[in-house]
Length: 475
Image (cartoon, rainbow, N blue to C red; front, side, top):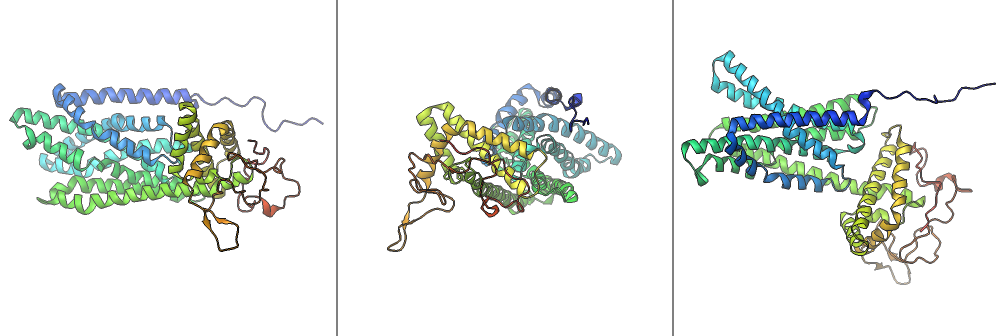
């Protein structure tokens, strides 16, 4: 009796708009055209000399902001192409939309009300926050939809939103500083009394974090939606919208602070902007530390299965240990070895986050495939990375503390097996140079005679059994 194959032998080809080169080409073309148009518009408003002065002053805070966001993203760094896309979107596409929409809306209001001053105030406090935050949020939405694998939590949302806002503020500062320089050229002012100096102090020195702070609220909304379970569809849709509305409200308050009196700007800056910025910074750093705890909590399951050595979860869960591992590899094996250690750390972190999503019921249909890809990537780099991570774990581990008299064991750090001590449940055979033949009996799937309770994670608590059974650790 003939039977049909479970899957078609010739699967349908994807539509042309699903191909990667089509999306890359379309986004690159869109951003390039937007960049050329915004360049022409800014140069037309500021003049060539004003444009060059504005460009030179506006670029000063950009490296510092990008370095801060990259540092925040060091636990599970996203690809550079995502950050490059976000910065280009903010500097080109979002800035172009903001200039055109704000100018059109302000002129329409001035014509309808015959009150140019009121139109400018209304445009700055109502129109500009809505238009600008929506344009910047579009980049966060695109990364959330099309780079979902790289968007795993609050830190990713803050980084993506912050880099987008940094690009937008860069173009906006060129425009403001260039116009200020043109005003000084007409009035003859120079030095600290000039409009250029005042604009530079307010926008670059006092509030370079303003736009990243506003858009960061939108990123937090998308980040919380990313960690929400698939059953809460309404919450996942409302959280990004709530973050966007908060960003618009804070932006409107900041733009309208000048209308609150002589000291309105300073009052809003000191009583609202700085505390909010401090709170956002604390939240991002706390979430970063929580990600490190996730690495330490999730990776021991792969130690039990033989994919990782007992010291690796501790080393990979500490940024200091990671730096030591990269430095050790570079010193003893060169730049390529340090790059392999960096990749090993990134893959291991992604593996821990993937397992966390699986335990929380948020893993996608490609969970097993993705887990196998990450484990294979770790296995290919183990010979270079494991000695460096073992060195880092031993260098950063707390010193052993003797127990009560007559007890031969020493206190150990939670989750860490000190160098020279056998791991719990491992026979006390020789361990040289941190190479742990772990575990010698784990060679088949499932393990013969292994009780259900001895598995690293109970199947009832983890619906997706990890791809960690078929191969033992071989030093």
